[in-house]
Length: 159
Ligand code: PNS
Image (tube, rainbow, N blue to C red; front, side):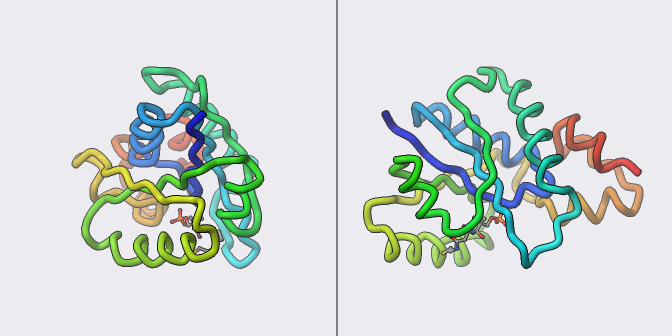
């Protein structure tokens, strides 16, 4: 059973994140989308809303949400991977600018847990410049983010 954890803040989940989930599902038998509970970050969407939006959005994937679990977690991603028996951490790469921080995280996670490997998937080019931060800013200023996030997220972004 090839099980991967896809950790993130998902504030909000974007079509780019869903693209990564779909790509991961093509490679792994089980994918767990894990939403970080970070007491130091003040997310614009509360945890329960982020989980609900992800769950609803996954239903819209062409393959459905089968084999995908959604949960929250606190603490280290590698500890979660161990608890779940997942051998891989999935992360998405949009552009070269993501690489440095992702490399650092992957190397440190490997040092903490040599038995857990990080696997990167490249987002589709149409998602390469979309980030949750920019989505929040554009939405807050009245811009149209309908092509960047799933419908469930859009409902929560609209004032
Ligand atoms: O969506 P994000 O904000 O880019 O996700 C970052 C995330 C959640 C993957 C990262 O902050 C994380 O793994 N946090 C859990 C704590 C942890 O394991 N830190 C050590 C990473 S080397």
